[in-house]
Length: 293
Image (cartoon, rainbow, N blue to C red; front, side, top):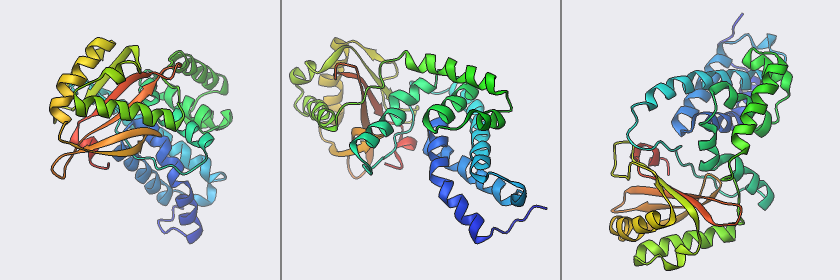
């Protein structure tokens, strides 16, 4: 029978899994609130389950959370049809907590660039790829979670890996190089002079901004060094010259949070190419996605 009262051991077990479940859900869904909802609903199902019959609780919790995310992702795809302008994942603060090697690994799988790559995948492809490649889940467990054969899951992971692996925007730079690029970007805006920054931009650099229809933001992606530099020197200088800049680790990399009159108005983060050049600028303006920064 289901027992709606958690023992101390069952409660502790769930709490030990809460953080991994959140990071799985965030990578699946791209927003903090949705990830928290998925984890909370997983807890409700854990509370109502016949826990004495669950042989592998950690795998069970991961499976429940994954399938909840798949359902939420399918609903999110439908709602994004009407999204105003570009959709970007919600930026999330990720304080430095490990070695340079673990920090680089985190940044590679949590960056805005990587999360946008996952948008190319179907919900099941995304789930299978994350479970295998990021969380090192055995194929038998993935198969049980998705209700598929192991061979079908291997094909999902292979197909997803091909789609994700073809893109070159997952390059992670040493933090010192990231900070230097961020300083050049900030200086270009505050001084309306992007001459130094120009030498650090990839020729095919892009700029994307997410206002969600709730804040002013360029609605189309800007592409190419000339167009991006013009927008930085003219548009962003006008909009951000009086903002207070706070450096922050955003999605595993160096970024900035901009405030004006005690209100967070934007965040900025980057993607880089294999030559260490700035390849993509991500600007978040949607106040709903800035609330937790």
